[in-house]
Length: 234
Image 1: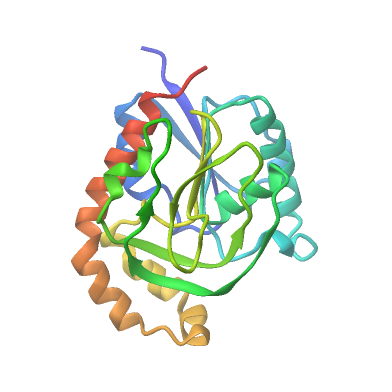
Image 2 (image 1 turned 135 degrees about the vertical axis):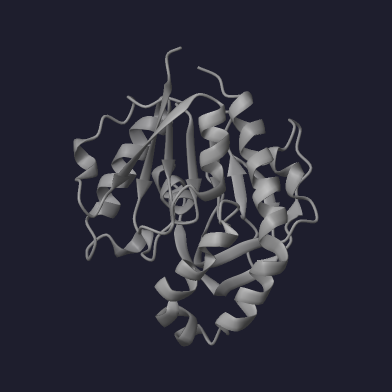
């Protein structure tokens, strides 16, 4: 059996595919992480992988002068999205996708860090996020974006209208984190300790909430991804 390929752009080690890795392997994908701190993304063929995933990270789309990798990733995404190739973005990844599609990315009204449910949108086509109805998910962002032209809003929160968007069956952007693993959550708390302190967010509450919600999110997130993978078109 020929394996399908997924290239996962990773900005920081602990923000990986998490609970999404299992459904990807079950669907026949060979996972290849691209750590952009050590590999120039401009050397990648934007169309080569069967699936392209851009993960989260602690920088912003507008940080392109300080972090030139942002410009390279947007160029990659622009070419891939123009070709309609299967593409998934999580948090920073979704923001980079929105920018590649010509939408504005900017600082939100406040940082949204913590666990809460989504308002899942009613859509003409089946909404892949329907499995997250009533499930608290992890939010960890300060930026937001306008809805890219030709896209549909899949979920919102009171603080962030565009929590998720799709553009046809092959393009999915998720502002929140459905992929986080409970067993790895302490890495998030330690890795983002300075941001939490600056934002006045208590890591003890985040830890308690993760202990309450992570297991259910892991299960729902895996169903979300498996369902989305099953309807991809070539």
